Length: 87
Picture 1: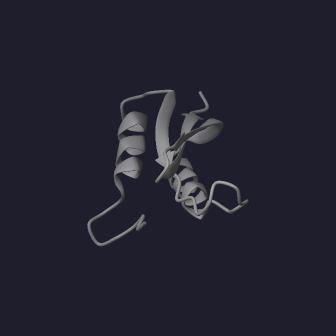
Picture 2: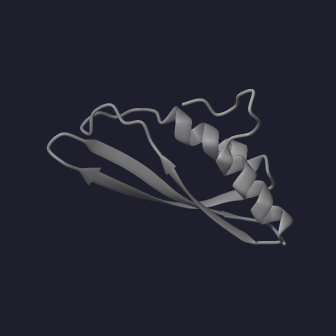
């Protein structure tokens, strides 16, 4: 996954910035992880990097909920993250 490229900031950064500029106090986003195997511990670098990028837009990470979808041929993992702004 490429977070930063020559085409400008990734969509989640644009969305976080737009929510801040509109005066929202809460920002919710869903970050898809890149799991290897469901039964192995692993570091989710892309999730951590995306959280850091959103925090750089003035948001404070508050809560996270994991969702997992499994089928016989696929395992996917996503995190719904809540960010807040200090008043």
